[in-house]
Length: 398
Image 1 (cartoon, one colour):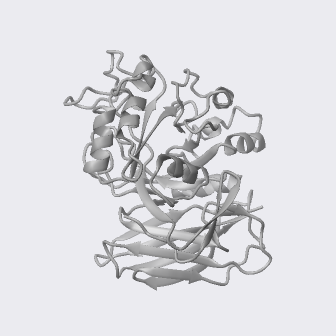
Image 2 (cartoon, helix red, strand yellow):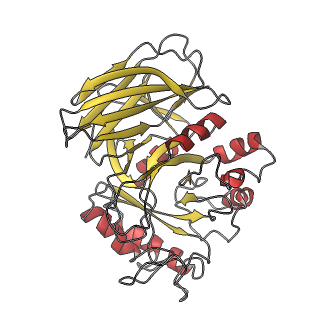
Image 3 (cartoon, helix red, strand yellow):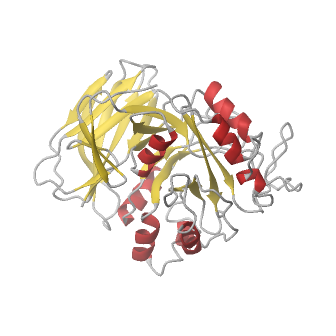
């Protein structure tokens, strides 16, 4: 499903400013985190892409196999799932790199090349780096080789990626997966926090390349439809530390449920459904996380798409949110605007507006003066009194 903007919007992509007209931008829905039997999931890459396109009706899917050889929680298709590790046959990209970067159509990259059809479906690939205990997981998108096993060494990961560009010839896009809370025993090492000599250096060096964070994820190890896990507090905490990341909603599929495990989606805002534009939009943080598969949302602040950075304006902010929901065109919505300052705790609500039905909502009375960034959250209550949320990427004031 697609939604278009109602006004011309300045979009910042890879350092260039281009002007898109009213009918140019759309929302494309997909999943940026999934597995097959080539790590600790089910099925095969070609099967995953076909299922996501034809059964789940996603616009894009990323297969992100674990990079390390110890990811043996997988199972052969048709056998019970086990966390203990049953993949002793070497069918892992960490043991057989050709399963990832091989030239045939059965490899992850080969299957992605064959499944990708610009204008119809975008097949992304990547790897999930590290382990929970050594710093949590980070997705690395469109890198052309299996990352050498160096779990927990996020500084070394950046060094390696500096000489291994992605399919666009750029430093690969990174994503924080299923973040942990500040009270978690692994919080001190999460995403390499212990690898850069202090939080300031950590935020600067990791933050230069991380573009997205899972606000919704999984539960990927369940075989049947379920509700995703929310990581909203962790998202606000990382924003307050200074990370400039856009929220995404993924499924972390370990069973053949690519796109159907939950209604969670990552929405990507761009002009056309091509691999280049999807990757450019993710790099620019033109993304949002939604608990509804059909909830189209496009937000702008002073003419900039949510996810952009721009100079802090002196006066009030022009905040516009366009909503389109084919499942509930007359639903009730609450739009909350959060204002945050780096190093001063979680962002707080500084503006609010209610609306009914599809259309464009403007939130007034919010100024940028006291904030380093603002972020928008949309809450939808449908006819069955079920409440679902969408988190739009912040805008940051330089």
